[in-house]
Length: 184
Image (tube, rainbow, N blue to C red; front, top):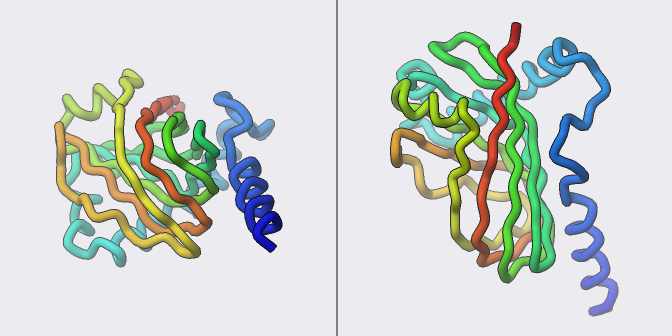
């Protein structure tokens, strides 16, 4: 029974690891945006209900990025990846991918949604240039994940994560990278 549990966790972790850093879809960018829009709108509504005190940020923030589903997995070394859309002044301006890696004590896999708010033009310009934000942290997730605790601006950016599910235990250091592909 113990071996079956270990094999299940390892399989889950391996199945959620990103397979590559480039676009994984053969669909044209316009079709990808159409598909993502519905998921993004649903994620925005979920975010507003999970964080009612931050719901107004969708109108107040200079810009925001929404990643409806970020897959994450790891066994000592891990990775995560997801696709999203970026809005400036409430208007859709770009497609984006989030990705990164972690190293440390970790095992399992999970999925979650992430929303980034940019307080001003300067913080948004850093995002558009693809600057990497390093992070360190720990978490434990079993079943459906709850909302993250930190929900305030730091260096002009507020990050909200929520939802998803899986089985993940981690104490890691790693980094996130973001792409920015303007929509024509």
